[in-house]
Amino acid sequence: MKRWLLVLLLLAVPVAAQTVGNQPPPDYSPKVFEIAKKLRCPVCRGESAAESNAGVTQEMRRQIAEMLKEGKSEDEIIQYFVDRYTNWILYEPPKKGLGLVVWLAPVLGLLIFGLGFYAYTRAAAQREAAMVDVDDAEIARVEAELEERSRSGGKS
Amino acid sequence: MNVRSLIGLLVVLALGVLFWWGMQTKDQRSELPTALAGRQAPTFEMELLDAYTGKWGQKLNLGDYLGKKPIVLNFWASWCTVCYEEASVVEAAWRRWGKQVMFVGVDTQDERSKGNEFVARFGLTFPNVYDPRGKIGIDYGMYGVPETFVISRAGKVVERHAGAVDAPTLEKMIREVLK
Image (cartoon, rainbow over all chains, first blue to last red; front, side):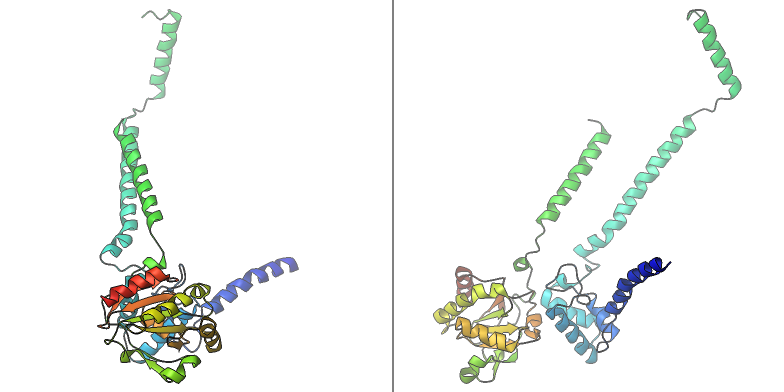
């Protein structure tokens, strides 16, 4: 029992650490991290400006906090970074132009899969419907006829 | 070949093309776009590293030079090992073109004492400002040190080079803004 408790405790430690790590530090409002999440870290791979602890992202978060204090809207702040880094800085591709293709691709893929699946099941149903149900009496009759034929040496 | 085989072949071919395209997609920072190309260069006023205060004053205001002569803006840091490769190249270019082109170095996200050591080690004589938070870097849409920007006589960003700049590349960039 004690061993199980120890295992559970060990498993709980990283979970608890994760929760604490994701909490915004007290000097920035959650809104800062909400906006930073939408921006890429320029010096990392696959990390947003909210998750990364690189110097440049710390400065990005500081600038976001400053701009929020100045009363700038989220769109204005994001545009500030796009003006300097192009759309590359956006963590998620924009829902217009070429970026729209990225958003629509999974839907299109699902649609193609759905159509394929529908065509397959429909064809299977048609094949099944084409099969004629034969009752036991008919099977017995055909078996008897086949036996009769084999006895008579295949002569009808 | 029946229709089913043809469709299968096309799907495999499409996947192959997709894979090839994915492999071609470059994530080389030097090839990432600069949003500033052709636009007015952001100005700044920053404290200079210790070696330059005697000649240039406590602070350098880029606005004093923008629109007057071409500018080479070089971002570096003492913790960046690649920056050691290019420091002497930038200094040599400054000695060669310093009368026609203004050179400004930006020691970014660094410790001031280490920045001072760096400029002393390479004998950098062009002014280098100290930007501990990396604010100027964000203004220029910098991805990481080292990066070098050339700004035209009209004060517009012409080109950006990411990574250590070598002598021929820097010369080409400078000749571009001297035209």
